[in-house]
Length: 495
Image (cartoon, rainbow, N blue to C red; front, side, top):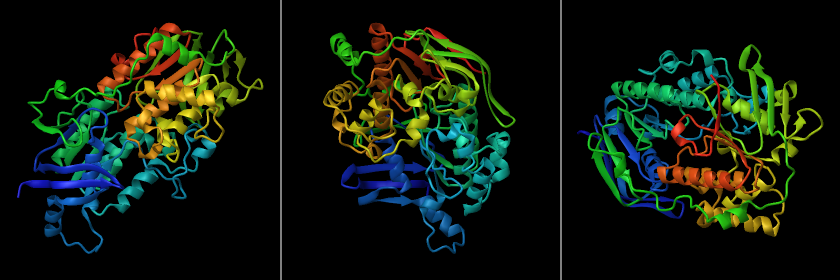
């Protein structure tokens, strides 16, 4: 038998929603698949279907690799199932603290005292290895070496950069020694060097007998991929060999971010009259260290009203730490010479006065924002700078939130719980939250992660249009210059 996995005429459900009807898909020995398509096409849903996360209401899914493994090995565990042979890399990590609870919060990474509640990288990897039922060929020594984790072993999980977290999570998934490895956008948030390293690692995984299935961008398909599934939606899919596939075969998203006319945009940007500032950010020889580890050193940076900046640098260079000093989340701001909105840090201002002037979107916010609020409530929380909505929203604020939702294509999601939205819709929701209060400074830390090309271009066009008719200052973080809006004029590059 040549098949690894076969899905036969299956109806797949999640709660009361039908995700797929008459789904057919198969993976054969030696194949490695990329799932591509516009946002909302069902790529992650298919990945989770293979993982066994959804109910198969009709048809069947055959895990041939599992049946072969059972035939070749003596299995004493009566609960042994296909899940034991599947590795899954999600877009969010599932780290727990030393009490084995998931009550991390998004500012915790920057606070050394709270960070002590998190395990170290070494403790986390050891625990994952001990839980694995199969302990070769990917063991502790190998993943530490292949993923260059030796320098991180004593680092607390919560202190890792986004790129470091991605490396660690993939290493942990490999410690399970899965027969099938499912990867949801494994390359987002990685710089060019890291992407090349991952390309080599994927090749080594395949050589070790692991079958790879990944959701990825049509323009960033790893070399290991042999086949591409182009998903237009949940019932229209086309299969290609990697040699046949071209990115232009992926359909355009028909629900991209829309660009309002100038009158509507001026209305949206015409909020309460705010104070004008001479300087929004001024940093003089700023440094941040945790014990003997130096994260930032000698940073000089001044941002004035109307300036639009790119903040760049490789994974782990300190970009998110630098932004946390501006947004008021980092306690070491008080030990540095920093002026925010014409006031020196530590001169009596509250962090809420700082946050009031800033719209903010980051991978940390995406990771930790609670899922029990509706899409509208998440957006309206932007008026109050709270992680969740806990105050009464005025009528004019409700109206404004609704108009922004229309611009961002989120009207139909208004009453959906944040946790039930697709990851792309969640990011759109948080971006709208950052824009809704007309901030003086907009901080966008890799804002378009997971967006398809139509959404990325739509968002860049929106930022350019806002910049053209307002004095909004912007800090925009991305690893790729082609992802920057045209309005970006300056760059601070960390090394």
